[in-house]
Image (cartoon, rainbow, N blue to C red; front, side, top):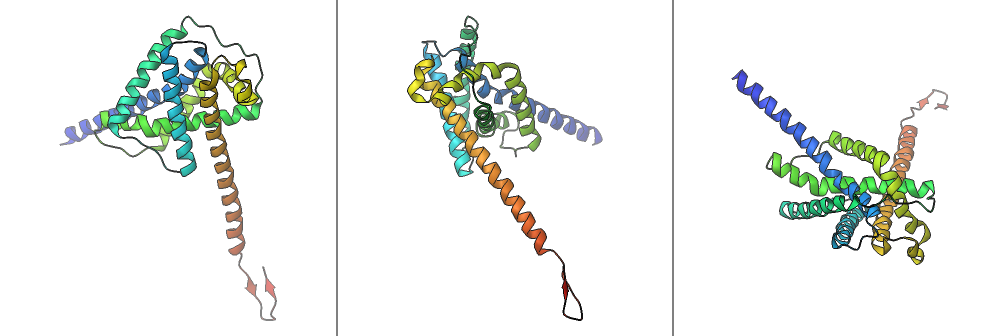
Length: 244
């Protein structure tokens, strides 16, 4: 009986480790697609447009989820189909980046825009992880939908930070030029409207998350202060004076 319990515990631990590893790696497909878009902006191939459409769809659902505070999670079958097609486009795109040169940054991007975009891209990555990747990984490893773990989101965020500093920072910044200059000057970008739309929606996700974070901080700050004031004990003395 003890041996069976030990084997069950080891099996559960291995499943949890493999679940966390798979979830983290597959979640990085979304930020990696931004690297491909930055490298393949001048590519006339069909898979470039397909990557733009797929990423734009994920970004739009992430923006809608951020506005409504409701996670948009597709069915497991649709998640499998979408992820496999997305993976196919990413694989073909990686082969296309071998012969492409790094993006030359002709314009600087202000740090507030860069910070908001990073917040937005992090939010889109978490949405992709919770909405699509988790459904696939849960169905494959456990056979049912498991509850999300906080440490898994932390690991995805840490992996995203490493990927941004190591690979994405210099490449994706050039795509932000369209957002900074506006749609009327898209001729400076070889990616055209597709890259502009993806970056714009991602930036809007960052704006929504930033505003919601500031509102949350302000609410808790003022509410805690108000509650602290109501908890002040007043001692009434016999002569009618009240000491606070």
